[in-house]
Length: 334
Image (tube, rainbow, N blue to C red; front, side, top):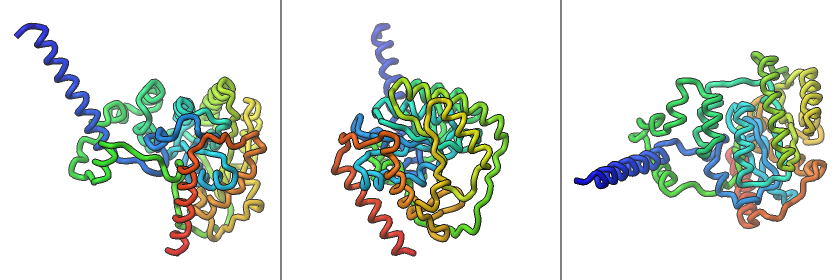
């Protein structure tokens, strides 16, 4: 056998192994349909069809309902948040998201200024990101040594799931995701009665704040370059950040040229029912999220946001209908 044929055979073998590894990794990786980091569904959105993007932790994907905002205003939005998402990851999400969308504004949940890494903040948020500079750089920056192999080689992380695979794993793994019927929002009907407001405590808050403020500056620089309105916001919660820290956030973030909105000041205007509208002290449920999203929709024109008219009307009407149906089903169950 000639050297050329040997090299060709080796290259074919390597190509086959790569194709198998990629396909097997897509099947074996747990499917992500809610609770943030829904990248595969986000990438099904028509390019340049989203007017507003929301980023942050579960405080964003539990509280903001894009279907409600669209129903009220015709403005299209998407929640590209992730569980316990650090600001370093949020910055990667922001820059990666804007490769396919040109939003008028982005809203970033501001509580992330006070938080550090957690055992969920890296793996889940980065596993589902598209491969490229953003994912790889953030993986090496944020992941621990134990997390690195699984993030760089998903087949290594999930090779033992063969016996647990479902029809959904095979179907989505081989044919891909469809567009998200709730545009990044996670529906939660369960409610917990809240008895009182409390103050939330954070570990290593000063150290985390200083580090995350530097990342917030990068977000502001990026948005300025892309002509995007940047709004940092605090989601409505009953377990709240101390007032002095909130004022410091407002000073530091507005000094970057961003807007700042504390939606904890709007409880009466939103008309929250503390006995029914919260999943827990940090998150609204679907009823509270509906109220908050209608209020937020009314506020968006204050930030110069209007419908871009580029959204797929059929897709968005379907999202409105999906949310209304799930809301009715949730009330029936209760």
